[in-house]
Image (cartoon, rainbow, N blue to C red):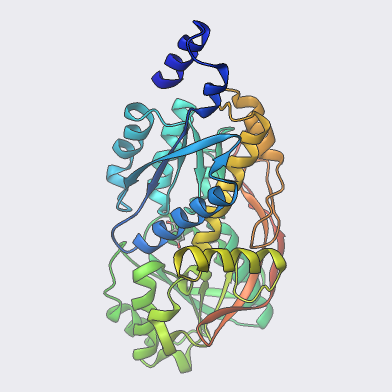
Length: 386
Ligand code: PHB
């Protein structure tokens, strides 16, 4: 319990403040996101989405006003444990929301598991967060890395693509998206002939693009995101590869990046749990509200931030804002049907979204939905015992 809350309780017990004042204590939300570096735009979009949902609820969730405490995690796993401990131990937050980078999120999940603090992951796909490290107090509003990778493997195998080269950053997100892709692609009769990597967040792609040109696969599958994705898609086109070897990827490759990628991204197909042109009343209302509030178009990260707030809201509503009632909070959040702009979804037993993965194609600077690659795809939650 926070010191403030203890004081309010004590004074309330002495009859010094009306009991109603208790409801006024703000809920402390620790936002641990990248606000600098290649993922900075992603962190901002998540915060915007989160704040939009709270604003739509009149600034309160479960009757509690929200106080935000922000940490820039710089997408640096080596600083992640210290950063998350600041929120948990120094600031005594009620819930942690973060982060974007899988390596950072794994450190956060460890601290959350050990301390029992509620954690809602609004992006990072690290499979283990809802796999071997799963815990009752850890929720994810986004995806597992396996999900969009696996869906694209199925799509390419069904297209009859025979060989693919993969290219990504060498860390959990890239490794796991490639692994998911490979699992489905090879099950469907394809073969990954080469796996290319470079360290995060490097963008020196030239030597690897030369290797792709020499290997001449039928297709390339890639994961990059944020600033790195902008450069990769442009470099791929500039190297003249786009016409001869079609580029595919998880949707992060082209989400929130199309203004900067321009013509280079046209035609690229990706798989993701969100898309442009869904044209549902729910998504249209969300997009309008987001554009009005921020003078920006929303992207998948904004949706995930918005839905992280919805998961928090559903738990808080059940306990009327009293997060100390952890078991009740968890049971309610676990069972909630989240009315997401992406389409309504539920959480799996491991607390990861069970969701449709769309096939999208870039057209006129939009990730236009062209189909559903995988319906209600559930992460296998390998190693989760809960
Ligand atoms: C991740 O590190 O899990 C990650 C980062 C950026 C994305 C997607 C996944 O766009």
